[in-house]
Each structure stands twice: as C-alpha cells, then as structure tokens.
Image 1 (cartoon, one colour):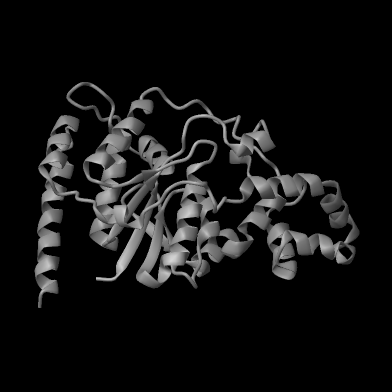
Image 2: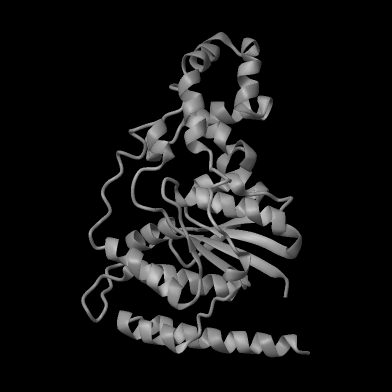
Length: 305
C-alpha cells in the first residue's frame, strides 16, 4: 500500500459538527455532539480514503501574530459556546487513546500548522502517494497543489458527504487558482475574519484582475494600464490590500518538532476505543468501529494474495 497522509483541521471540524448535530450527552450529562461528529467523520475518512498516516491540528488559546498585525482580527466572532468548550479536551483525549498525533503552536492558527506540515510533506512527497487535508475552511484551499498531489476534502451540506478539491475544483469554487487565493483575498478581504481588502472591489473584479495580471504585485506594477475609476480604488486601498495579504497568507514555516512516523501508529480498533464509546454513549459508532475492523481485516487478507 502506498503511503497516504490525511491531516484533519480539528477546530474547523469540531465547530462544524457542533452546529450541524443536535445535542447529545454522555452518561455524565456532558454534551458530546461535536466530538461525535468529528469521530464519525474520522471513521468515514478511514473507510473511504484509506489513509496510512493521520494527523490532527488545533488552534491554541490566545492571540496570534495576526492579532498583532490587526487588533480587530476575528474580534467580531462570538465566544465559544460553553457546551462546546469541554469537547475540545475530550477530542484530544480520544485522539491520544487511538495514537493519532496532535499538533498546535501558540501564536499561530491551526491553518499555519497545517501549512507547515504540508510544506514538510513536499520534502517527503517521493515516499507518499498524496496528502489530503480535511477541513471546512476555504482558506486552506491555498495549499492545494496538483504537482505535489495535495488536495482538500471538504464536507458538503453536513458531515457525511464531502468533495475532493484539486486545482480544477478550487478554481471552479473560488474563481482563481490555489496560488492566487491570497492575492484574491487581499483584494476582496474576508469579513468572517474581520478584514476587508479594498473598498469597492468584489469577487468578479478581483477574479478579472488576477486572470490578467496573476498576482497583487503585478496589478500594482501595471496600475497605469487599469481604467481610472478602478485605478483610484486600488491606489487608495493599497495599504489595506497588503495588510489583508499578510493576514490571508498561511505560514509554512512554524517552528515545531515533527516526526512523520508518529502519524502511522493510529489504531481505531481497540478495547480502549470501545470503552470510551461506552462512556460517551456512542452506540452507533461502536457498531461502525466493529464493521471497520472487519473491513480492515478483509483488506489485509486480500493484500496477501
């Protein structure tokens, strides 16, 4: 079997699961719907994508370098619901029990840790078939790279269904190629993160400019060619555009220790897992884990012949 690395964007998926599923509670009365959704998605990925290596990445508490660049960055976001907060720690405990490594770094977002792992993967790519990043965050589409076989798997309309995004699918979704997404967001901003690019420039204009000039730098290098009304917007918004560019860029050199071999030690089929599922009240997932065990055993037997 060729090596396949799957990286999960823990924070994005936990939030998505929390809002997608009705409240569920453990025997102790603790809400577990977000944890249930993430574990269910993990089982789906193992069943369908058949990874050899698995990693989870999370945000750390506290401000990041982006808050230093723009103090109001993400300031409009509501506080994390109290019912969700304990589920982050529960998720980490579950991942530890199944030997899936978790990476995070204070001062950075999970996106930056994922970007750094993707950059490390490029160095190792001769040994690996592909890297798939599982996330609901479109920002991470900037990491898609056909040449290195880096793709995204994004849930569509819930948790059970999803779509693989390579460069073609990314361009169809975003209107620009993956390596232009940062330039695109520099122009249009991202209200969900509370930065706004250039006033008066929307997706259609941004896509058109990048189709012709390819990058933000090249747009300003050819500013004299651009119609006067649009030129004025670009010049007045230049400082905001370059700040937005920095905020949108996923960092790919976050300093932390990484050992790819740790990602190959996961084991979803164990008494520990069944015990945890019993504590959490995950009866359906217990049945699915037992079916997964049968599937993996059949595939092992098939590979012997």
